[in-house]
Image 1 (cartoon, rainbow, N blue to C red):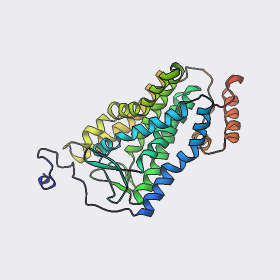
Image 2: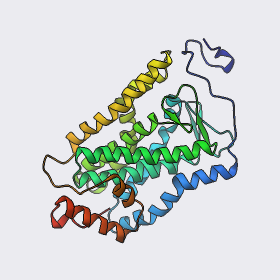
Image 3: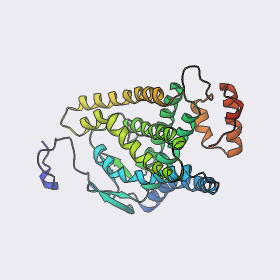
Image 4: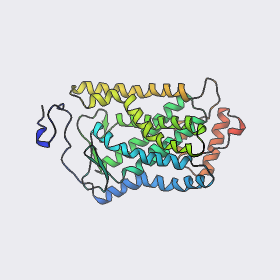
Length: 307
């Protein structure tokens, strides 16, 4: 068993729950590149849209972005459970669970648990098949993997210990569970938004923190427990694989609860169209939506996008 007492860690912890690795630095340039590319740029681009909607008494986009910001308070807990270590020279924002979370993280949460979840909500509220839920899972996982691979290879942070399914420093089990969280928040919004009016819309602020925590501890539990145990390495790989498969079955459950019913018309989404939709100007986005709505047989009154 590893001697953890020298790190001030109480005895009894399993040997493969490693203490934080040796310190390292990212450098100011890498920190700011990650800050803008993987969070701030998206938020800066989306904020005028959210404020414009709020000026028209549609507060949902702004509330969802704020919900993502609140959800960033869960980062330290997830870092501890998933074994993530930040560079020592990053600008801090808060410390919890003995982990100092850097200032660059909150806007990443706004971008992913806020805006990406809002896109999931948009797809689901207009009718989503099981295929669409799986596509949302894939889309979120791809974007999360790109963002995290950039951060890891900029030396902003690292995953330590046994991390199954790692490529270029990024453990892909994180892409599954993080993306499942985005879809969960989208489902919560699809259920709550039509039912909340007036001041009750403030409850939307809870969507992201509730959705992410629920996903990690209902879908991710089997890997989280193994990841922080004394099980042999092969068992921890097996638990990670089961969790990743479980995320796909979880999409089936979410579709059953929140998705389109059999033979109900839905927009003709593909993975490429989902990625394209979030990156093109509003006029082009509306044209794409009208095309998908027509192909999917949606009624004419549903052909105007309200994203």
